[in-house]
Image 1 (cartoon, rainbow, N blue to C red):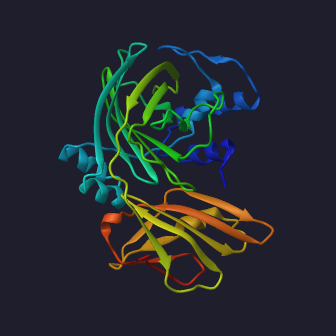
Image 2: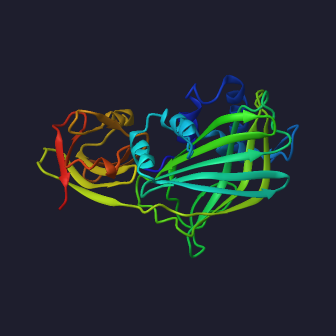
Image 3: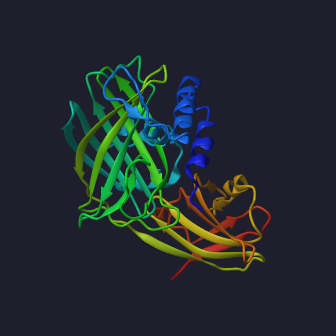
Length: 339
């Protein structure tokens, strides 16, 4: 199930920790303009105005990630309590990029990159004369991702722009980590719940729009082109299979990689309450439970079944021979490595 923009916006706008009341008011007004197909621009005080559609897509994303090579900032990164990425980073899977590009009087430095088969994390520093420590509430960007052959493999852009091909990543989250006068650190995180991401060795990331939101809910966008050459850690994958059978539940796919595990299973019946899906737990032999942050749900009306795909924060470096999958309403399914 690919959630439409209505669902994404409604879900994320209700996350009180993400967007304060002043920002929600601006969002509501902008979103209503989109629904009415308005072509009016939003006048702001900093740089170029941004269309209502761009505002909406910017505000439709939540929060997460951090990333750095120094121990202090690595600890801040690990405070997101993501054991999969923590283990991957401790095993050398964080790529230090440190590339700076300038366009439209705005400088972006891609500091660090994390990428495995199912998750993507970026840390960037954005420098601009108008950034104010006391008046920057939220920050995000639009990008396109190209493989080593120049083929667009992913994009996160306003719905007013065309996308070549299908997207790999979903559940995009932005976290504004540190704001100074004329500088801000931003982290981005996304997951591939239905496909496998290719290696990013030789790939290019092109940032084409940066969105700023001030404390009063004012939104300003800067259009430009900031292109970064990417490198990738060695992506490792390992398959797990079901050791036992559970009535009404079928494991279709379970692959663990550097810092994440993509798992797909099918259950009898049509799931109506999707919140229950996030109660699905992956349990290791120490009794520790891991939960997914995003999901893809496909309802098979003809067969009255539901196919659910999740990405768990679990690492191939854990090297555990067996795991348990606990789905609400079903017996535990034991997973073992496929030799």
